[in-house]
Each structure stands twice: as C-alpha cells, then as structure tokens.
Length: 345
Image (tube, rainbow, N blue to C red; front, side, top):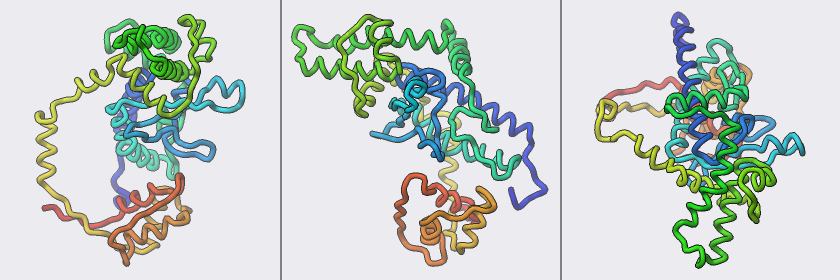
C-alpha cells in the first residue's frame, strides 16, 4: 500500500511467487508448443511478445473467438532480413488460461517490480523473468523434457519433435483427412482443399519447402498458401489429429461440485457497491504517474476520455475509440486505482 510506508512486502514471498510463475510459464510453453500446430524452433516460440514496443507489434490477437499467435519465421530473418509471418491458433482452454494470466497475474508482477525498481516495466516477451531477461533457447527443450518426465513418457527435445511432427503431418494427417472418403470418388475441389490445408501445416512448422517435402516424408505436389483462414483450419485439424480438445475438456472439473464452487457462491451473495468516482484531471494524472513514472503525460484523447468517464461532469454512456498503442488500458487502470469508498451488503 503506497499510503502505508511502514508496511512492506516480504522479498522471500515475492521471490517464491515469481518462482511459481516461472513454473507456470514452463508448462504453458509446452501446451502451446504441442497444441497449436507443428512445433516451431526455440527462438521462434520465445519471440512471442504480449505488448507493443517501438520496434514490434504484439504477437497476440483474437480472431474468430480464438487466441491467435503471430510468430515470425526466424530462419528467414537471417537470410533476408525480413520476418515471415506464421499464424497459429490456441485451443480454447489454453487461450483462456493465457489471457487470464495476462489480465490478473502480470499486473501483480508489475507492482512487485515497481517496489524494487521504481519506474521499471516488465519485459514485453511472454517467456521472460521479472528482471527483464528472456529465456535462452535451450530452456524450451528442458521444458519438454520435464513435461515428459511428469507424463512418464520417453523424453524428447525440440529437434526430434520437429522431425517427427513433419512426418506426422505428411503421413498421418493426410490419411486421417481422407479416411471418410472413397479415394476413387474424391472430387478435384476436395483434393485441392485438403492439400491446401496440408500445405499450410507444412508452413506452420517453418521448415523450408525442400526440407518438408523431400527430407522427412517423401514428396508431394502441394502448393503453399498463407491465408489466415487456412491457418485456423490447419490449427484445428492438428488438434483434431492429436485429440487435444477432447483431452483438455476431460480435464475440466465438474462446475457443480467442490469447495471452490461453494466459495464462489458465497462471494456472489456478498455484493460490493463502489461509488462512481468524481475527480479532477490533476487527480487522474497523479494516479497515472504512480502507476508508471513521475513525468507521465496523457496522450491525445486519454485525458478527455477519462474525464468523460470519471470527471465531475460524467456522461451517462461513453464510447472511446482509440487506435492500437494509444493507451486504452490506462483508462480503466487509473479508474481501478482511484480511492473510492466501498459499501458491502
């Protein structure tokens, strides 16, 4: 509490909390690496960022009610100096888990970081430590090995899994997709759609065309495609092949039982009413500077929007339209940090 200087967080407790977060991120990496499509190289999956920077846009989006990861092709950067986009969609459960982490856990980590380093900000990279250091490439294989140990299956690393996934994509996937059809009666349009889907799966692995088409599983006459809806279909087909969605659904606990459910019901019965704040622009600026830095200045549109929502002359309904990177998050973050009395009933 910034208004109680005599109180301080225990550094040991903060370090333990961060250790738990790092363990969670390791497990999250494995889930994304396995479930979203053919595996990427370690530098590619570790390049995911969750917030905009001066040089890059964030890697996470929502499309068709699914979380989309936009990953750059690392090998093409070395050859051409330009990234090649690679889109993949997460299963609903994994996507919800990731968004929940970003919405509730990251702000707590940010607050802990500001206590020890005023004005500091978390790294935009998803897989990073609180001090800003990004995971090294070897940690991806280490995460896979530990996941195999927990599941009591033979251990494997990124390179082996990429080779096996390429063969699976060429052999098992195509057979599964065509298993419901009489091969002699398949129309040409169906063949093209199936092969285009398979072509995108080849691209999702970020293998070169020659490596995928010849080195791992023979050759075909596939034509590459990069349409976004093909990525959606390919990710869904990959999950269907490995039965990932069904396995995740089976792990979901019964919502009608358990102590946690009873606690939730009890909390719902106890309603908290929060008075609508009525503050000045100076009050809003002071709170925003506590959140970020002492010399923060509102961007165009931020001040007017916050005054319309929380000022002394509040509008009944407010619709704020701001471009990406204009600071929309600050609007509700400042409102949440305002000191307003709460009444419990």
